Length: 298
Image (cartoon, rainbow, N blue to C red; front, side, top):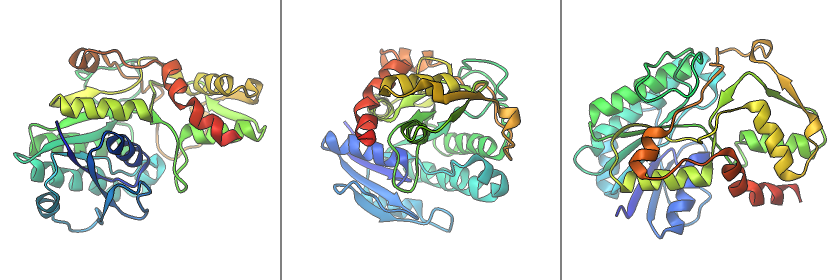
């Protein structure tokens, strides 16, 4: 099994969650950090500016990991639209360098997105041709292709997760919970669909996928397609908060800078078959996070 892990982009939400899961399994973990620090004390921090010139081979040579997870990225979709060069560097350039440096030395996993299509079809599969609508999606597509070309043994997992955020980065569920807790109206998109998965379940699947030596493209998400509006209602019900605070909004009226696909739902059949297990539905994901969210409400 893989005992030494390097997480590139370790100070993000997924990086922290994955680090915690690995530490709990008594793995040795190194994580690159940029603007923010790593708050998991058992993790070895590796300060690294991914936007500039770097030597990925030297980093891997020094750490000698069994597995590298590339989780770095610019998740602000509108910011990607204004800074496509930065998104390209983070999602593709640096990712390709780490993929190439990992070739023949260790397992390599690239974390991708469910944002890659035009949103006209539900539950897209790995075989469906991508059709990106914005800079975020375009650069993620480039990142997938560059890493797979640089290292044919690359594993790409496309996902959409939610969970407990960080002091400098709130998650979707954090934002919704804060609104509901404060008794404020919560507008959630009724026309935007996705297949979300809770972070603790995602990290478990990441570790299993790497340990099982999967390669190529897989969708790693929840099994249930729901709208953001339905998600907010279910979250309110799970927390015992007032669901009447939730009202429907629509993407066309939001005035967002970047185009968004209306449907980002993913088919997870391929990964379920490969791992021999079903992907969690929304009830299971909310159930895993419920104690964490409830503790934030006090």
